[in-house]
Image (cartoon, rainbow, N blue to C red; front, side, top):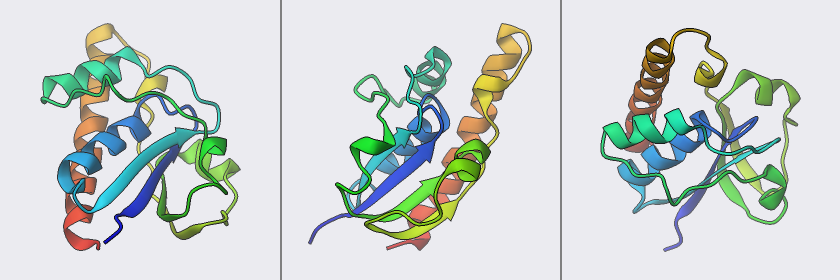
Length: 141
């Protein structure tokens, strides 16, 4: 049986969508084929890699991708928008998407503070994404 495809969408594909991709692969990679993308992709933020490594998730094989690489080319069962900015600029209907969801998470890249405070914000957002995806992976098909 073919795995359901999931696309996590954010503006830059540097933090939240990358974390979500890694977590869903961990929690339900046997049931889902998981991708992430951004409207304006940029390199993955170093703190994203660091805080994921702290909990044993190596995302060094992940890279930023543009939404145009997927939409209209791949049929997704789920499109999950994880940031407010992408939600406000994102069309409400995409070709090939069956279910569109909006799960806003705070942008840790935009947080201002000391280096330790920034890392703490990345960890906080990481943990919220993990909790949401673990619960969703248990309830979804």
